[in-house]
Length: 366
Image (tube, rainbow, N blue to C red; front, top):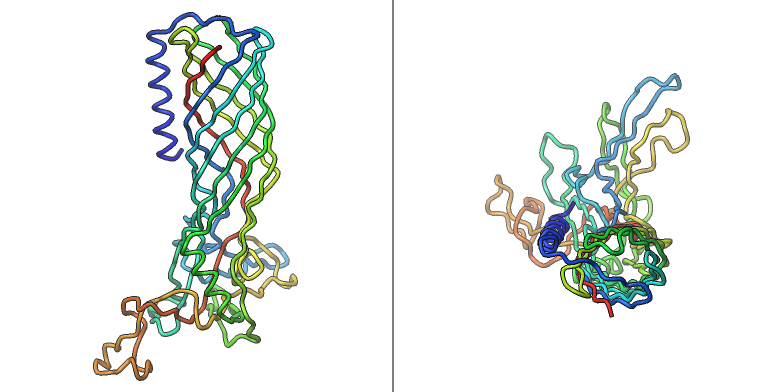
């Protein structure tokens, strides 16, 4: 559970405990209307894991282990996930009880949150590679932008103790979310850099035991295309439940939890696909199977997608003029505002809108 949701849950528990100390007997709400307002958070369950720590295990025809192919990226990025982050939101609802137990509810809400961890990894031309490593990819996790959702729902529910101050209920229903997306400045800059660059696949050769390398130059170089986003509205169905406490005549405080299943996905493509570069799969395969050894690899991109730093003289050439020639220089200086060429991976993908909400609010009975 995120820190935000933990705080919300703690607040809900405190409010319900306070209400229980001063609870009054609930009044009949059959054939009556109620209005409710609540604050809360929505957390999605769909995430796209980073493939940077992937490894393909190569097996002999008899099933015995033979070797492995490791993805060349920095596997520290394996803890990052591309997806929709937790969203804060509000819900306004109106309900009508057509019996002592059963009610129907119509609601509309507003949720807003970030799309995070658009992963870019780069091994810049001129950046030194430590002698104990085969590669030196740097990780850049970019903020994707801001997503806004306006969910409208129709829900039916049943209350189990309609005359008691403490009243649990369950519910289920359908709805539709109107969705919009505003890209971040970082994402816009990356998309522009892609549109203005060209590149080609540099193939990963070798294995763990024999040694791996990215072998260039690319067989072909083509113009790259920027980032596109698919953030269309989507229908959903949901179920959940909650607790009500009557603390004053006509007034209740409630906590409501629901899980949502959507038919749509949020998608982000780069250069027409889910990633720039070809990731090593995280699987097992028998040697000799078509595609067992790839192709996998990074894209050699120029003039570049990110600012990786500036050239400074190597330790053994302290008087080198890096502005004239970079032969005796290395890319270890501070950023200079210039995009740098190199080997690049960009990872995005598609994630579902599915998730869970937790709301804390009040209701008034007319």
